[in-house]
Length: 214
Image 1 (tube, rainbow, N blue to C red):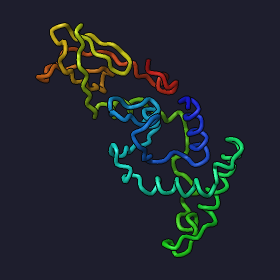
Image 2 (image 1 turned 135 degrees about the vertical axis):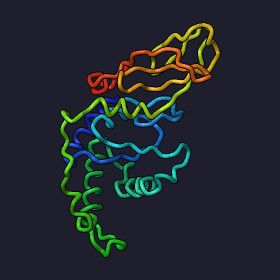
Image 3 (image 1 turned 90 degrees about the vertical axis):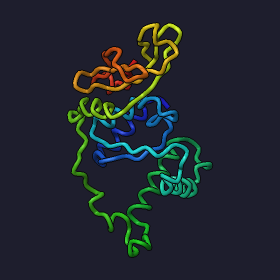
Image 4 (image 1 turned 180 degrees about the vertical axis):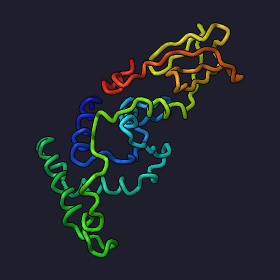
């Protein structure tokens, strides 16, 4: 699914319910990377909005057991195989979600509905406001990370779709990459931890909103 469609759907949810404090996700696209080689741009957009992302550990679906289980339950409730088109599926999803939250009594909650037990869910103290987007949140988040790439025979590495030269003397060596948040540069280090060079990133608020860091 195109990233712009996913972004638009998330904005619709945020306008209705507000910005969550955090989101839990697996390592698949579009919010994760199975190889943990990069942080997807859609995830960076959410981070810029002030949402903390929590990724499950790779290949451990038990980290998200309740969500995985509920997806199966919801699939049975909506009988998705009987839906004639996506619009009908969406209608059924909204209907069942409304019933699940507003009308279904939960034993462990004293036979209360979820809204009765957690009335604050109706209101958000974090309203969606695109002006609150802050690219510095993205840079600070990336500054906590650490990536490695192998230099090719020409002394070049490829990182986030960008080719960077480190010099032929580093061919076939592991190059470490870190973000310098204060200057918005990638720092490239040799295997001994010595700084080779700094390279400007392509990360700007405009590019993240456009979901394109190429």
